[in-house]
Amino acid sequence: MAFLSIERITKTFGTLTTVKGVDLAVERGEFVTLLGPSGCGKTTILRMIAGFETPTSGTIRIDGKDVTGLKPHQRNIGMVFQAYALFPNMTVADNIAFGLKVAHKSASEIASRVKEMLDLIKLPQVADRYPYQLSGGQQQRVALARALAIKPQILLLDEPLSALDAKIRVSLRDEIRAVQRQLGITTIFVTHDQEEALSMSDRICVMSEGNIEQLGTPFEIYNYPKTRFVASFIGTLNILNGKVSDSAEGRILVDGQEIVTSRGLKGAGTGDALAVALRPEALSIGRANGSSNNLEGTIDEVHFLGSVVRIRVRFKDSAVSLDTFNRPNAAPPERGQPITVNFGREDILVLDGVAN
Amino acid sequence: MKSTRFFPWFGFIFGAVYFLVPLIATFEFSLRMQRGIYSFKAYQVVLADPNFQASFSYSAIIAVLTIIVGIALVVPTAYLVQLKLPRLRPVVEFMTLLPLVVPAIVIVFGYLRMYNSSSWLPMTGSARSTDLLLIFAYVTLSLPYMYRSVDTALRTIDIRTLTEAAQSLGSSWPRILIQVILPNIRVGVLSGAFLTFAIVIGEFTMASLLNRPAFGPYMQLIGANRAYEPAALAVIAFAITWACMGLIQIVASFAPGQKR
Ligand SMILES: Nc1ncnc2c1ncn2[C@@H]1O[C@H](COP(=O)(O)OP(=O)(O)OP(=O)(O)O)[C@@H](O)[C@H]1O
Ligand SMILES: [Mg+2]
Image 1 (tube, chains in turn green, purple):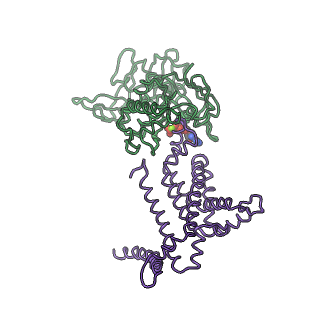
Image 2 (cartoon, protein in one colour):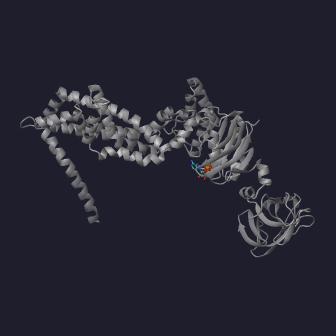
Image 3 (tube, chains in turn blue, cyan):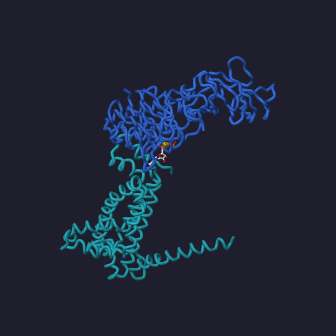
């Protein structure tokens, strides 16, 4: 049985249902990210795990024990907030020691644990400083140490990096992941940044409007998005609307041109409308022979980004973006120029749900 | 340029004169107890008076107890209203302002009706229980200042996240209030406390009608019977109030965990 198991939880505020029957099983030591746009219910789920909100219905179990009705201070959960939430009146050492004092640990045990935590976050020199004397990144590391000091069963992080600037964000996310691996602590991480989710997680749970859209490893989520929502939220996937022209052979008509998929059509019948996704890196310029798909269009936009030139190709109603490398000796593509784009049969991902 | 400078300066000087001249005049008068020379004789007489010492200590003790009861009442209330019952805020704010609207004499007559020696709760029956009644009355009187200082201080910190952080670390409500919230609003609480002290030390109506040996009635008595001592007392009372204001400024600049 999973270490943290969330079973059919819903949460309703007044008339607004923000979490709609979510199931999630997290294994011991796993790093799971809740990823989704603003307002999709990520924080609400996290707060229900922490005990700050009570689910309207459903059960939350930790290590087999039903904790749904327990108060936050009875759950032994570490939480890191977007706004750091360090106690301004206490030094760094006192902040880290707070939970240990609450638990009536001995003074010597507290002292050694505080030192251990400061070493873990690589800030042994700041023990006697006050939070206002630290940078944002340092404050968030102290907040992490404070949450971990009490040896929680589960670590919850709600957008801990979004108040920091880009460079620190990248280094701190690697550091959080390293600490998590070192301690082997079961972790739920909330973000709306797909790059953060892809780079840190064991598994990603993509959410939309209170539902889980897809749960899988970063590789699965990125390469095989199941729904149009996931496809458009993760990366810069191109989405094309089409119509099945021959379901047995996987033929799809896109803007009057036929393409063939080798991945199956997920039960769509001939004549059905559907949406397919193409990763930008699967597309190349020019006509390919053999079994590859070719689509003819015109260049709509050209963005020179330095080492990469991003081209937007329009067919009729649909368009795709693709990146080519900059070549100093060749003339750059021009707007309005006709162009053919090719991609393999296995590169077409058929998405769930009807196109809109 | 000249005209834009003139009016603010005029206002400032007018205000200063308005406040300072009576004060200086009172101070000057208080120094003239001995004929022909300036001396602090009036102050010596006042400070040596056992009734001064007794009434001042009485009022100081009552003020400290008022502050303790006030903090115990106001801090949890303001905290809960902000955290859990934000919709009650206008109601609570209105209630805390009532003592400014209802005159002290009306309040104290209400008390005398409610708690007289033949009522269901005869609080005016003994001196100790009347002291208690006086403390509660002063808590009410100081409520507008105490509540406002505490409420403003609470707004400057993120009490929700701090509370949740403490809760997730296993902390219970009393510990959160005492170790996390109170230290971070200490400046607001202290300014409320000094304002309360200044109010209680000089209060006359309630102490007099409840017949307690407080500093306010003592000042009134001296004022009615002596010439130079009341002026000295007035200057002393001013000094106490200003010392309280000064202390507010000082503690405000000595708060650990805050930028200086
Ligand atoms: N206490 C509350 N009372 C009423 N509605 C709430 C409350 N908390 C959250 N909501 C609503 O629930 C929805 C989901 O909120 P939630 O904070 O879980 O979103 P989120 O996915 O964390 O978004 P973000 O990325 O912006 O933090 C929002 O529409 C929000 O307005
Ligand atoms: Mg959120």
